[in-house]
Image (cartoon, rainbow, N blue to C red; front, top):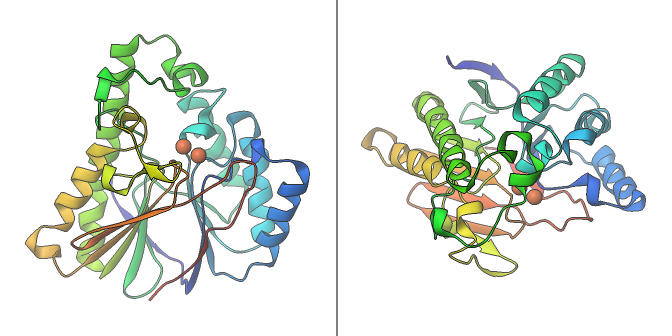
Length: 277
Ligand SMILES: [Fe+2]
Ligand SMILES: [Fe+2]
């Protein structure tokens, strides 16, 4: 995959994550869309878990319309595939983005220049099953029963698939992140699953060893931190925007900062404006 650049001048970036619209009552959804319509921002960034597959085209379409002419850059989360497969959802979203000019899916080689100093890249990522107890965990994952690609896999095959998904995202960041860091002082990186366990919290406390395989993308974390620490990029800054754990967290490792959005399913919210320099 080759990288390609585009420019979307952005001073105020509105970050949204894990809104899980399928779990919200009509009143909460109305409140969310009212806030979205009246928010003053130059672009939106969504880091996944918008809804479930059957509702995705409708809900993303509603977000697109509420945003008006404001660009909506997004990655999907694991819940967005619930009830379908990777291929079906990705195809449906590609068709939708063809009809809604302000919808910009991340993960196709794009480096989006937000200011002369700052660019945005992104890839959905996935939890890669490698952190904490790994494949020996006794905790299960709902994804295995809700996403077609996982349904007929035994536990060993499922964890191999998770590992492959993590490696895919790591390979993507190995191609795109250095190209972005060569050109920009700050690179914002959007991905659904937090890329390291240090940024993980669960229900207000630490994330248990047994749960960590399903809440962190270690392969992507190794790639992101490894690239950012190389001497040629030591003066650059990478800010990761992620979600999935629903528990707010910030973690800094040298020139990489990892931000994890808090979220309360049933109560979709805007995570706040980020000022781009
Ligand atoms: Fe979520
Ligand atoms: Fe998630």
